[in-house]
Length: 266
Image 1 (spheres, rainbow, N blue to C red):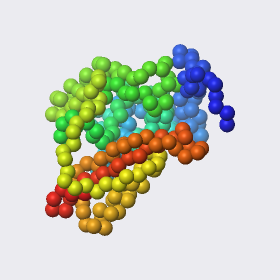
Image 2 (image 1 turned 60 degrees about the vertical axis):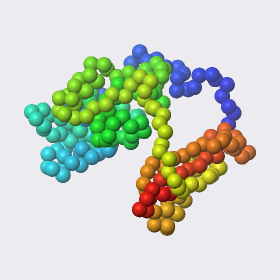
Image 3 (image 1 turned 60 degrees about the horizontal axis):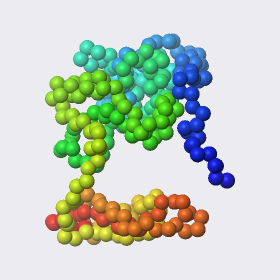
Image 4 (image 1 turned 180 degrees about the vertical axis):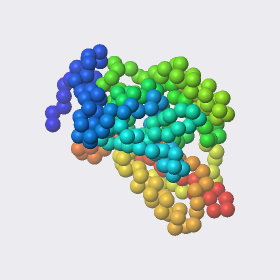
């Protein structure tokens, strides 16, 4: 396939962000209701996206959630529940920006006025001892979907009023909340020294890095060691890929994993 000479990637080309969409969620839901024989029943004004599905499973197990009778989406189920005087709708396992945006558009077209996404995340920079809530006030736009809605920019900014309300509500409820913004999204820190570590040096593409961790894990289990500290991966030097794969990200790296057996060892 010949390499395109176009300087602007297709995802950024020929965008009319102010133009009305030819495909609307209202039309999609209208046809879905017709095919499923559903009545046009508004969803709760406050809805939640639960990508992990944990909240939905908890509500169902407690007998607090029931299927919404008017939700016409082809791909998901909307559950309704009542909490402290308010009705809520919740959709579980809507993972990925493109899918989540589809569900969001359908929810707003069905009567939702406020949509909140609540999910779990790993901790890269230690803001404080978990568990705690992170209120996101801007997001790095590397997922692709948002470029179909807004002109190109480095970040997508959240509504300042809504994020302030979220932080205030968490504080009033006695929940720990952390704001990660500005230039402090990530910070560098020095990991403590470990006397002995299980280490492996590999050469190849980044997508093959899982084989190193698999080999370390197999060795550690076979020798009766256990995880004691964070895994560490150090890139030693860039390596030129083999013929045909020169464009792939290649590197020589050392993968190390902290383990213990009565003492910290790897």
